[in-house]
Image 1 (cartoon, one colour):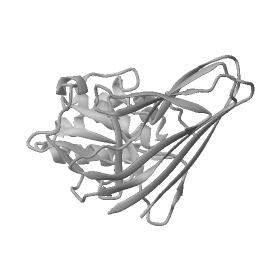
Image 2 (spheres, one colour):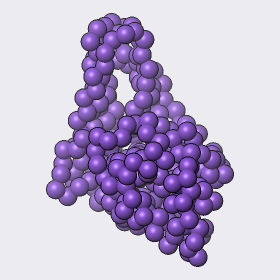
Image 3 (cartoon, helix red, strand yellow):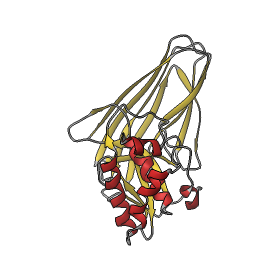
Image 4 (tube, one colour):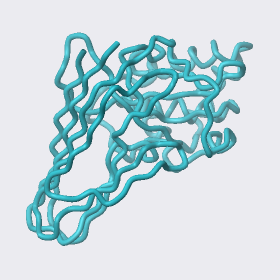
Amino acid sequence: MKIKIAHKTEYVYSTPVVYALQKVRLRPLNSSLQDVLNWDITVTGGKHETQYLDHYQNHVDLFSIEPGAQALSIRAEGTVLTKPENGVLGMVYGRAPLWHFKQPTPQTTPGAAIQAMAQVVSNNTSQLDGLHELSRAILTAVTYQFGVTETNTTAEAALTGGRGVCQDHAQIFIAAARVAGIPARYVSGYLMMNDIVDQDATHAWAEAHVDGLGWVGFDISNGISPDERYVRIATGRDARDAAPVEGLRQGAADETLIVSLQVQQ
């Protein structure tokens, strides 16, 4: 399936900014799940400083704002050909070893609720079946609701609160899978929805390393493994590692974030 994406992220500041730097993970890479046919990132109000592959094999671009500017706009757009592989990326490995994806982070440190949730996997004789059951259990326990959690909400807090979004679902899954001894990681990307072109934000799901299969995706929020409607952008141990855009700035200016995203065939 050919998926066309146009994603604009704009930062507007209340006063001129002396310095700001944005770390951008918005370039999809070729894999067994997708081929990037064309892709471009342009910046207005700033300049491209450098680019590199990080230790998770994500393509990272660094953009700085023009001194004294009050706005910085980053536009990513292109076309990706996706493949129906039922979310199975396979035995594809980078510089980060599998044991690294068993380690908790501040966002995914398990508490009593996640420890209990992990038993869904541990009690199942099939690793893959147990992970699918875990996905269903999380969606039952945590109702999808926008606006009740923040970007820094931990997996344990989201689970005990009983409400959250795709970031929360993915991080709960990751934390529970790790308790069960299974390497797991966070994935950020895009999801093409058949009846919605304009979207509010990127999507997120999880991948777990299954014996004999390698990395397998689980979209907990939608109760499926990713299909050809999904485009992978970045991975990491949690949402922060795979954030599409993150940055820093000097000065006391107030910041307003404006996002425009279209995903379609």
